Image (cartoon, rainbow, N blue to C red; front, side):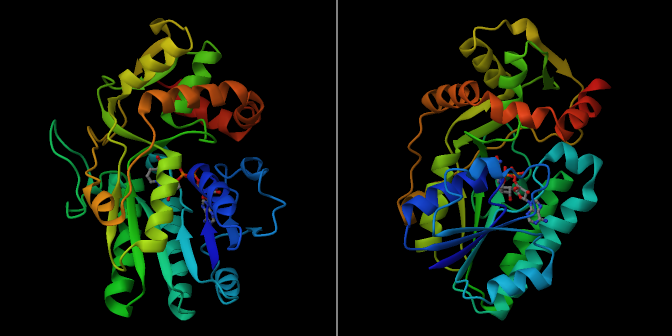
Length: 335
Ligand code: NAD
């Protein structure tokens, strides 16, 4: 099988490329990534020279480029490429609509034109909006996104659905909860807090710190996508969750205690506008229909992840010294 993976130089995409290239030595993988601030080829060093892997630098909104790749025998497209950070979507929504909505449409058009066998859209539980104290998102929960990021992802999901209903395109959508693990860009909660704690910098926590997220190890997510790619029923949506609900402040305190640092580093900052209170996923469908279950226990996963950031200091130091540092100052200096 020849598979086009988009956004494969980002956090989840690079973990997925590494997993798949090793899991399926007889498949051919093309990784199309624009290498935005979030894309990093360093993540892919271990697979770069393998014969079944090829990297192409380019934008998913570039119709000519996408068509030239897909027309050359691509059988499946897995779309990870996106602008993915909610805070950035509040200050610069345009690029979220361009990449997440228009980019997905360009990929869908190419998939339709060249009759590919599967289009898999990697989406998020954030499209469902927010939950109160109880309840879980299922695949039939209405889409009520609250941020420019989640609304752009919801827009893409609706286009994917429409290309199935209107044109019979063989599609699946996966909607997963917050991922954690190696190679996550240090603007996201877990790496940000680990790195700040290591540098004895304050740990900025939004609002009262009681927003709840369900944490999923990136490797468990990769196995779920692999299953949906091979066994997902066309047109179906699959939720993927880790069953690990934690408040943000619990995560931050867990990291501090693991690193032997004081809670005094915690600094509560003004809440993010439109901040969703709670996300929690019901993964019954993918478990029952496809036999998926997360392997990672959160306590082991978070310990290993913290160790990974300790052992890969060079990886994140080179990132935070660059463009990200300017963004960080702008984001948190006015609090
Ligand atoms: P990321 O920001 O780490 O990586 C995104 C990648 O897409 C980068 O390599 C970037 O260079 C690339 N990219 C951006 N715009 C592009 C464009 N126009 N053309 C080609 N490439 C482009 O994101 P991530 O955390 O790895 O998330 C991957 C996918 O999973 C996204 O679609 C995201 O919405 C979804 N998702 C992420 C999480 C999470 O917890 N990280 C949870 C649910 C869903």
